[in-house]
Image 1 (cartoon, rainbow, N blue to C red):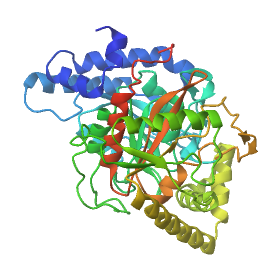
Image 2 (cartoon, rainbow, N blue to C red; image 1 turned 60 degrees about the horizontal axis):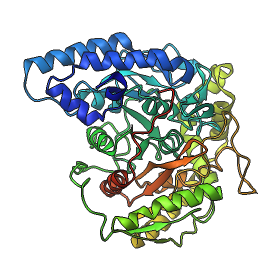
Image 3 (cartoon, rainbow, N blue to C red; image 1 turned 90 degrees about the vertical axis):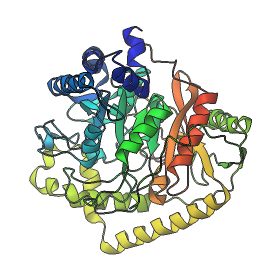
Image 4 (cartoon, rainbow, N blue to C red; image 1 turned 90 degrees about the horizontal axis):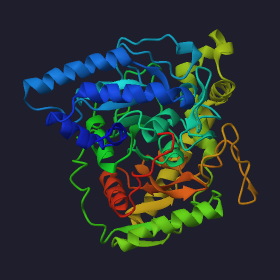
Length: 475
């Protein structure tokens, strides 16, 4: 197996090879660090590469293998973390000049669980500042500039987990972890051509980050991988209650996410919606993704046009999202405003302007959306949409019209994703084709708490329409 083949080998298989002493954690870590050194300067995927810490962890992991005994599920496998996660002993910038020299003395709960699973952190991937702002759905910051799409570096990776998506598809880590507050895992998964999973709100705890407090009701950390099984393994490692989480929406232990991956699609009811009743989609994208969605009929599921007519909830999403961000980072507006990106300043200023009454009205709207989504999901086991209305666009040039209709340039290309965060339900983006050489994503939305069925359908689609043998030329 040559270096490129090994770099793109599934993480679960790499773990088996490590346990069987066919390859060492040191060899794998050195392989990915070489690839990062070669490709990262042209892609801006990593804000921080922690080569020394990664190699030390790899040597320790290798010693454990040589001693024998049981190993954790991702022992010796490399992982990248989005740079919104606090990492003990590793620079954690939040994509911001304000935190550019910050080295925490503690891990976030996500980083803590990644280490417990035996994975080796090779670096922190790029994010827009605090994952915020009008550029929150793309990835540009003042530390690196724009993160570049490996399929075409003139195009965006999407965001806010754009560095994670690019690192994964370019083979710069075995698995990646992003976070998704309004589509931030699924948008770059679609634009970069990887699998991205947003868990049910509360499935993965949020605690011990750099922001204080951590009130974001919408955000979840989740896997970005090249294989669905890798995502299921990573989700298993991240999931489960934690008493430090201020919002323990899910208190029970998670199910076995691997157990149902091979189950049939027969009997599942699926609804297809091209717009969710309020969005706008490029008709070529809509037709291509609809064709992909109908592949589930070949697998035994029933797919029908869904009668879904959601209202536009963006204003309420933005009120809550930015007001929560202001609680954590609003002090920067007074103390270090010149260090902020223009979009982070805009977001924090909007958050500061949200009155208690507006916030309460937006919370009420969120609950009404959840009731509406629950009603839809009573008819379907899964809801299918495009992940984004268009493929990746050129850096800093979001579409202002789609299908001849004017759209908001900052969110008009992802009307499908932020309602999912408001509704608190699980969803995934899975690669389903290309348009003009750029990837497209199929969006699979599940019922609250039913992450397992989203993974099950993703695995069935992956088997029927595999994508992993196609890589960006530069990778």
